[in-house]
Amino acid sequence: MNNVSITLVQLEVEYKNKQKNISRVSELLEAEASVGDITLLPELFSTGYIFNEAAEIHELCEDFNNSPTIGSLTLLAAKHQTLIVAGIAEKDDGQYYNSVVVVDACGLRNKYRKVSQTKFDKEYFSRGSELLTFEHKGLKFGVAICFDIWFPEIIRGYQSVDVILHPANFGGHHSFAIAQARALEEGCHIVTCNRVGQDVVDAFTATYCGSSRVYSPKGEVMLQLSENQAVETVEVEDLSIAPQYNGIDVLDEIQQISSVLSRYQAK
Figure (tube, rainbow, N blue to C red):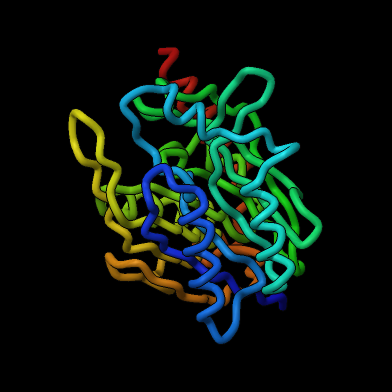
């Protein structure tokens, strides 16, 4: 059975201050006795999330072919022998994306672009169109960003993974109930790394609640952080099938249910 340790960095994000946020992550990891096989950071960890105008975040977006932030994360990955999964604003061919990068000691390994869109994402970013899965230390991982977790249509695409890594900018605790439901539905671990701190814009102040959580495939809470900046490491292990689906081919059952309901709806 394969085990993977995951370090959650529940960061207090310094608004629009990339260098400060990268330095803060570096200091937090340096203070740990050990860092997990994977290090998970929040959504848009280096910039903040809500802005007065789209131009503000567009100025902070980076071309991932020449990204100072990815360069810094590469050095941290090498130093701590970890795989870093982190939210970074991306610029590509005149388009802007709310993205997550997967970075190892050699640099950018994978990226994922947020598929769901809040009203803020709609103002700032183009929509992603592909899911991301990758293998590490014998386990299969998927990536979802914040609001993605609300949509079973997205998470259902990760039916075959062991762990969904979920960087977030949650302001309220209700989203964790959704994450717990997704863990139960998909029979996989869900690791939500939220942020703390505030984004202050003209119209309002957005406050982020921390409380990052790790749910098992049974929907049990394996780890819950406070509402303050924190770093914690949790170990997850391979579960080939969730106990609630023992003896059931989930995809086949979905197809059977859809078939039955389509006939009912056609009456």
